[in-house]
Length: 405
Image (cartoon, rainbow, N blue to C red; front, top):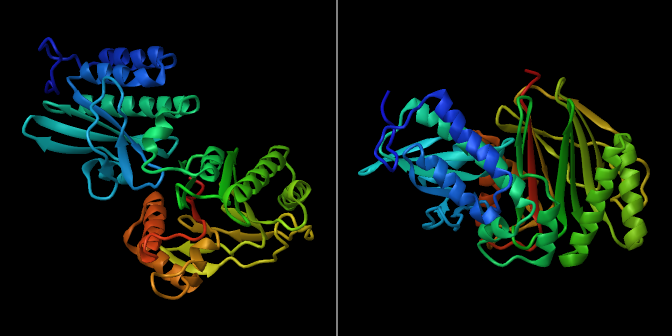
């Protein structure tokens, strides 16, 4: 067994399970009370017991393009790292540790994952690394990710770090409404992207995994700015309320419709799509209220549009929607999106349209297999194709059924 680094007194660190329990125990015992701005000291102190130095915590920015160092006492700050084109970014994209030899040792980057959601990256330098150190660092990264998510709920520190530009009030509302952008379980994976990240208004999505059933909704409120954000908030709130009292899928539409109509009147509307996926069987059900039809991706290619009966958008008092059904195969992906993704124009050219969207999906799915990477790549590719200009919200959500396992 190699030393794997040295402590401040020069003594070899004991890599036994007992030593690991002490390190992890310190994080557990102290982490629940440490203020967010002092979290860096605690993390650096524990990685230091392994011989680690230059410890950094890098958080994903809202645009999903950069990993931004958390600038708090005890941590090494440095420059933001691009998610595409850096060692930290590779650890983040591939959800695995990346080790980089240096003249003074080894720089190791570990993904910070909380329930499959990508929080960021933990980076630390050691003289050398052995399997015991790797195991302990992986466990430290898991605990740190949990602490970051928990403390995110009662501090502005992490919000500020993750911003690379000014954010509109409407976008503030939408981001506070969203669940985690990604989720991974043995049976189902999910990943979403919102654009423009700092000015999104009427687009939103929500999901919940209750026992074996994944519940999903995507909404697109008419208009722009605060009015759209407020309508989306009411629609998602009504969806959550209906979902949590266990009404049927079609009845959820009625709850949402009444809430939007009652609050905003007959000239306001929200397109919506609600789904339920039985993760034990792959049985997918959905209802559509004026929303673009989802795409079924099988074998990393779009094989069909999921057309079915539709009803009027939420707020217009349409008839109760009929439920469409489909049996998924393991590995199938469902792509939900808002119309801003297909109605935007290629730079200097025609509207994207669904055919071009399908072409982009097939190309990216063919070379980028992870669901989070596909969602990011597709959103960023479309953004580049329109010259970085977004005249409407453009949101996508990918769901993958992995099988009953």
